[in-house]
Amino acid sequence: MLRNRSGFDLAGLTVRADAADAWSAERLPRGGLGDGRDAALRGVPCRRSDLALRFVDGARCVLQGVASCGEGDGLTLTADDVLRCRGGD
Image (cartoon, rainbow, N blue to C red; front, top):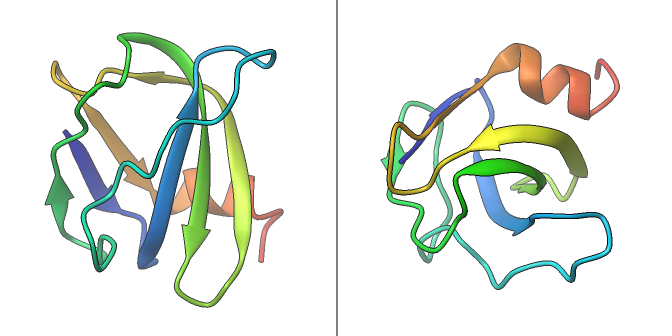
């Protein structure tokens, strides 16, 4: 489960388990994931992964080494996560 509590609307999310791996297919539902919304993340391993975020404003960034567990406890994306990822904008 991904809980978006970031204050930003997400247009896309892809995952890679290791820097040497390729990025996954799109993991968000069609239409993205607005702030305050939740979405199931299927096929995301329960280990540290890199998450590539794409925002509705076209910005992109990568959160590295995030403990993500798609079908377990999940992940809550916060404003601090996004600001760290986007370089404080």
